[in-house]
Length: 386
Picture (cartoon, rainbow, N blue to C red):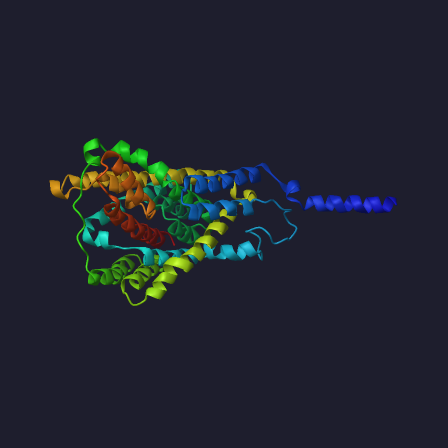
């Protein structure tokens, strides 16, 4: 009888060793709380729910603790686990070009074509990337890591993942979570900066309505755009090629089924996979380090610098433009490539000062320019550092 109880006791002890309760750490609790916070913001505040719900739930999945070294093949960093196979698309940069394909199929570049000078605002906002790059170098990160961190300033999650997978694969998780977090927090981070940098008169500037763009222009743009940008930065070809390919599927008028697939089921599937695996990569035993926290801080700074660059460059441009051609600097924030959220912020802030002044269509020009700009910036950094 005693032997039976000893067997039972040993079995219960063995069972308990494998439970999450026995392997829980403070780090796991912290990351589970963060994941719940992401889900809360997505559902109650509707901050980028298509991103934050998968990422937040992925954090829960990634931080259910298990017995380390037991070869259970559960964690995202354990070779052979299902999550590790899914994460392969992140660390090898497979998912980002597919996201860009969908973005290209969704995007209407008409506002940019109707007012090409607004592409400069998209370029100016990339100041955040190079500003954060220099700050990261000063803090002791090696150049490859600094470049991967800096790209967060473009507010472009797929580009951040793509560049990090090439230059600093050990930082992919922290960079991806940081980039997507700040993309979701666009409505919180940008408005105070926009208001601080502009005065009441500037916020009320009315811009001329965009001109009508012909179908020929729309069809030629992805072809010309691909040639110009990829000849300049061939390193960014996987992103730029898929972006412009998706756009010609949309604008050609003869590949509607392919365009609908790219901007619908395909991008939805990839968004689910990238969100859940990026979230799961925050496994506390590997992710929760001083370095990751530093990346979060630098990501916030890079995003602020990018917003500053876009708004201030619009003010500088106005010094050289006639009264009827002036730019409302509130659209400068849209130079970051969080499409279309930063453009919506321009619209919301503009309406606070003039309820009849609609800036959304104007803001979409620097917004889509920012998508191209962040990919070009990533290509430039790769050219120097790979």
